[in-house]
Length: 110
Image (cartoon, rainbow, N blue to C red; front, side, top):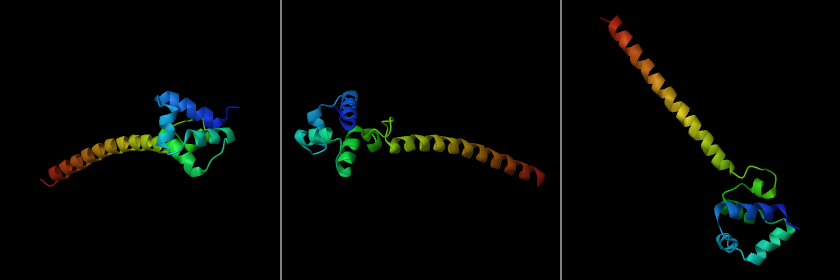
């Protein structure tokens, strides 16, 4: 029986072009230990986090709790980039308003 963790790991390995053996080395586990996790569809949280980090996905994705493979951190980073871009635009507008205000005050004081 193929489990959720196994399915998600193998799918992601294929997507990123990583061999199973290399994956096991990167998470510092033997292939037998990883296959045991697949068989049980259960593991320690620390092992799950290692797998998720190497694969660039969330632990929720590996557990089948989410169909979105992107890590939350990546999603948050993308949202922050949008917000920073928006704020930069706002700063440009505020600088222009201040420049216009200063110009008006200068003209009124003449």
